[in-house]
Image (cartoon, rainbow, N blue to C red):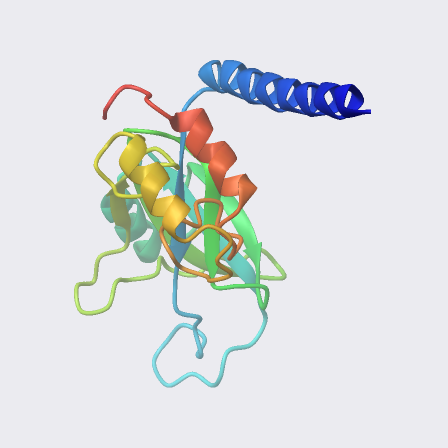
Length: 202
């Protein structure tokens, strides 16, 4: 009977090690990606001085690009919506769902992205670009790192693994180890760490 127990243990260990090997083998072939979270303050009034409370808001359009010049584009857009349409990559976010969008592993690590946000109504009329409080900036520019780069040093290594291990199975939103932004530090985050582990430093 003891031999059967030992064989079962060996089989289980062999399966675990084989699974780990396969995960690492696949991770080495995965294109390193980056994530970013863009958030904004919901409007409370329609555009224009002295207008009443907001009406007709359907959602938000988050523009993002590595080459877009949102300072020029948003200024021209504000001057004449018909003659100077906004162009570039964007995602639509429904109103009432959230005032943020998480780009999950969909950006290129090491690249600098420019983000800008506009609101839209049911007729697809777009507002002027959102501005940053106190500065008037119409965009946010950010160089994005590997999604698994928890300590933001440009490479995913043992330091990131140690940080994640220290809070593993934590149920908390907004902590850096919650790589996939689901408010849990769990296997999903470990998978992303494995995909990015020891990729070339940015």
